[in-house]
Length: 481
Ligand code: PFF
Image (cartoon, rainbow, N blue to C red; front, side, top):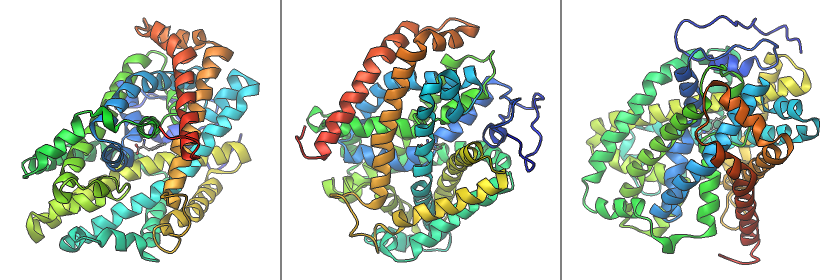
């Protein structure tokens, strides 16, 4: 399609190893595609999308909720099997077709265009509630830098904040507006570059906080709960929770990695890149969990209600740690921590919004500017129910699921497994594994080829279908595992 508002795309190699994140999303529909100049550029860009609130906020609360060590054990097994296979497959599809998800499946097989559409729906569902959590992080950042650390650490602070009729809305709207402005003016390259310094800072700070919290009395029991698998705690929910988290955290089963793959050069190796992204993403999630779960154990005395409370865990436990450094130290530490998390959330939200924009541009043949405005207004409208779901709209719930939980469940535990299942069937039985493995072998041997073939054809689709069906029956109350 033609788009007068778009800058011409450069196909020149870039000077530094810096990846072309911005082009990678904003210039989807042009014929000539730019590409990441180096493998490390590709890995960093993909890891930049992967590392976000999923690692820092979502992983720790799921680990605490679903039995600690057993969740981690399940997650790691799934990451090196299902995660590895799907990420390889998506990147290879992207690189082979040179298209983003919505067109890639169509290009490989016209009848399967619907799978591209399914993948496209998922970021549209995620972005609004992702931004609600981004708003919560913003609120804590503001509270800490304005000297309110002690209040933030008090019991009941988080619950009264999310139950307030306008505060979550205000911070949510502010977060979406910042993302919108960055995307509209196309300055995300600067943001992404800055985040290359800030993300290591977040890792260093998290390590510091973790070491400090692990010296607190009672932390050892928390570490044991977090790391040692107890098979008594295993249930189908652990499995589905871990699978959904895997897709979410690694930005899989929603077309994102297909888009990234479409910008990868033929001479870069897919297999080793995937290993690196997986190690990076899982490492940060494990670290965030080690920072948050034991300390939640310390402050709650191992109370299962606190551990199982869900989305609020990070916001309830960490302020207490920061506050123990006194008003000034706590303010600086807390302010810095939430600023860095805010940055991680922003970079991921930007890549989500860019995806949504490129879908609108592709589907409705609109200019980039118009598509930005539609994505912005749509995200604002769709996010309101999630933002108010803990207060004004609290009565709207299914079981103990709030509106935000429902969107989260729908995308991560229903749509993503379906998209992942269909992707495996598509590769294994429609275009055949060879199409993908040939792409991977363009520049060297694919060490895990046999494993990949067996996984894609049999184990992944059967496993995903079994997990999905059992958990739907479980939720529907047909039986409980
Ligand atoms: N993987 C991100 C996280 O763990 O926070 C979430 C995400 C970001 C998903 C960007 C998709 C995406 F395009």
